[in-house]
Image (cartoon, rainbow, N blue to C red; front, side, top):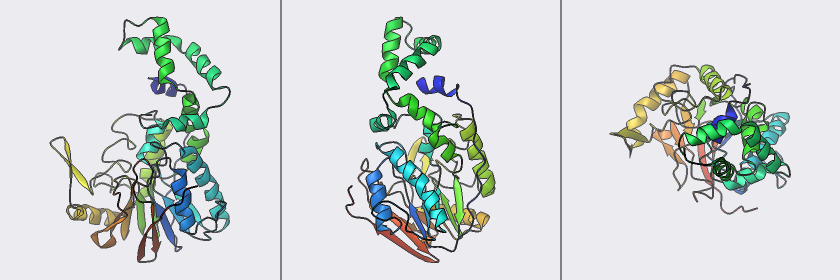
Length: 338
């Protein structure tokens, strides 16, 4: 309820995102991080991309993070700020850091906070948070009371306020601000693509289905940017569509009679082949669908799944993918606690 009431107050301003150009540099890719800053640091250090202080030493390398930085863990803000800084440092050194939009980035933008860890709110909380929350309630009291009583008509004014306070932890308003078009993260997200093509390798958070394979990379990214700018929560928006690039799982599972059924990736090979042909790519790298034991190199390397449940929330393998021309290497990083 808070998110819906809050989002309508914010202006929309997201720039269209262009496709990532090709690169002959070594490519490193990291899957879903879900708020685990310690794991992120351990991985980029092990890959030789940053030094012990976290500064870029990767030279002309390209680092691709395939989305789902936020939710489930407490330290998304730390990861986002590291990625922002590393983008600048890598560019100055002749490298590049590409950060894709995942479905959890879209969820935060549209106010779907179901998976936000309490630590995420705490990261935004400051000495003025309580006053800010009280002021917001006073300014929007009538709308909050009306929305609450649609489901709880017998609550008194005081009970409505108590219920809203319980559902609105300190820092939540600030988090929504940060993910908005004018916010620290929202402005950064405006420059992030949903799909990137780097040296003949297609990177996307979920996957590209036949329903979207006819669209050029630029158009997919422009549509995603427009949906984010509008904070479009409609189910058919490209950032919410189950067949869209942020949510698609069709390479690994199918819906049969309302139930999700795991499939052999070989069943998806014809679709993968069509997608690769459509974009002139030789392989596609995806996150989103986890495999906790490690990165899966499938279909003779044409499909690579790099979501290994890196976050402590899942307890999967801390991993990264390394691509040098046609050579594919997968890595698991042990330990690495801060």
